[in-house]
Length: 383
Image (cartoon, rainbow, N blue to C red):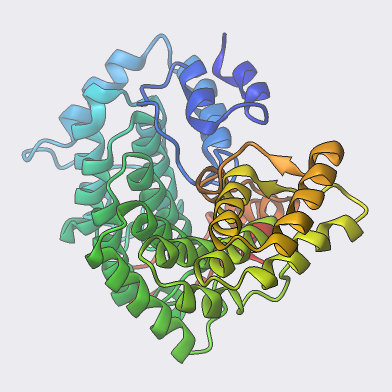
């Protein structure tokens, strides 16, 4: 199956599984953002095309690139050569690609050769080849200053780390991202989502402290976090027996009828032993035209608490609602944790933004201190 044809499966399977169908060397973990939202699908299209074009000269081309990156070589690295090398690279070619990147970035400090912005393209290569450590090293390298200073490059890096369960490294990279403040943005929404996801997955006293401090900073500057960031943080608080704080956090979401918000509020009121407050939330979905659901594990937790309290009136009403929910398919077997960690897909608006960014990629690359372009989050989940 060709890489291009296999893209048809992207909407039906996870990004990692779809990339494996394309013959990509990926461990079976799950990133948080979809392949489409990260631009991996378009990268694979380009990869497929270039590998076909260079099929008969690939070995000679790679040998020439190795020669051009020796210390003795005076040859420059052209944009087109670097672009081609990134797309045809295998595991064995990572070192030569990094050498080309560093030489390319260094030569451009004096004179610009080509006008293509490479940061996100390189991060997609690292993502597809599953090279998180190399991605971190390049991100931190002084030889590549300014090279990865685009918000989508940060998002790709953090999602790659998330996929490989390198949660502590996400927090470390976030501190660097904050210091760089691309476009004046110290708290990019998509990155904050990944940071809160990392804290949630770690579920340690240190990650809880980090998340609480981050949340306080966001509130201090009037930042409205993405809903997914809110839900990750709220569940982390619940996991650490802080339902009072979780209830306050959930209150910042304008639309309280999102399924994750409803389920988290049920769980929060249950932990607070405010069982009376759970019934109106349960009843609220019966007024909706579309079928709304509650997670079975959340309902089971509430039922267990109602039975412990031996509140006959509430338990009777709860059982009546459960009968209706079962008949009308309002109960989901997906756990709350699974739902919180579900893939964030791209929207039509984000696709339009990505097309705009491709046009922007034809503008000259500038070192970080002069970088002015600002990218905004466009996922429906971020609204």
